Image 1 (cartoon, rainbow, N blue to C red):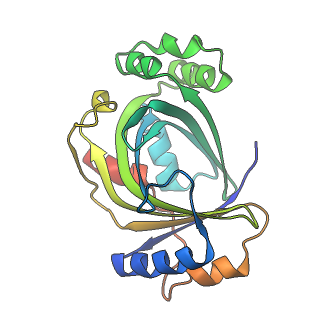
Image 2: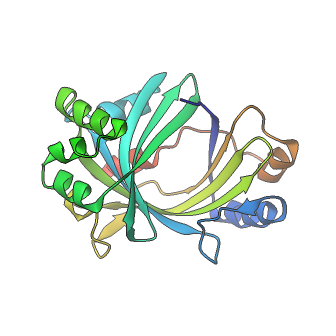
Image 3: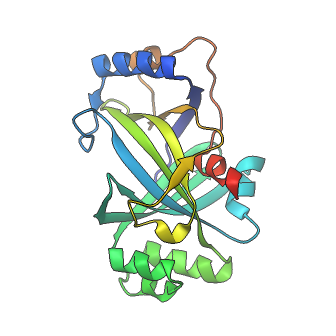
Length: 224
């Protein structure tokens, strides 16, 4: 498991416009972005009845993890199961592709579907659904404008229009109703390996902006 550095900043729309222009000049758009440079992200987060993942995030627990299922641009032909881990301020992500049928069965409460592919990450989620009581909790949806910079393996994203779903069972229904999250700023995220090049540090610098611990999942849980 490889851990990476991560910065998050809450910014406003004017900041977004400035950073978009700067990053277009020094970095490349992600290969999966649409012609306008962005794409839609739709995720389903898991938590237990005591909201362990949410509480650990709010309390700043040093070592924590969370599971989510995710797809992009309303394309349910490619769905990923992801486990994101945090340790000493560093982050890592493991991901595997899961089938639409598996997700539909999970949404109906048939968690045994996770054992049929033989993938370790699916089996781990199944185990923690049994041992920790994880269950589908909240839909998180937003637009993302991603950029990449090869030196340092840097990835910069601008996330905006953060919305949440009303019913987890609607996760695969692109027509389902979503509402704006209670706290929905633009989020600048920067991830890198061993070093962050100066050209990127300069490009993302904004006066009065400091790193924060904003969580899209926590913002979307404000409605329950």
